[in-house]
Image (cartoon, rainbow, N blue to C red; front, side, top):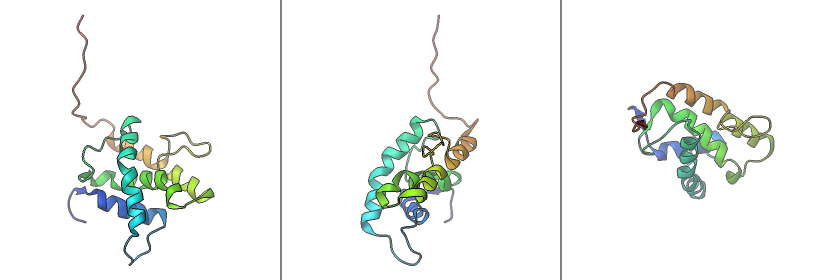
Length: 131
């Protein structure tokens, strides 16, 4: 994939690969794609709410965030993709965290995204209070 940005379709394909439900050389199952795509918006909002990263446009995902976002989405969608037990816990903790003794937001990919976005401009309107 050339270019600095990736699309939500690219993200969904990588999520299915990371979750182990997409075999190489076969097209993704329509139900799995629909399952992940319906949850994608709420997961991206959750990541923004936890102040990990804010993806303004799911069809223009920065390339340096792409792998970490795929791990987070795979962990969050794992149970609905049929992953259970220890494999699900590993997938969740590799992504956002929150399984077992790992706090939510303390997963491997979540920490990586925090480091990548640390100190970068947010372009948000700065709030101020005048006395």
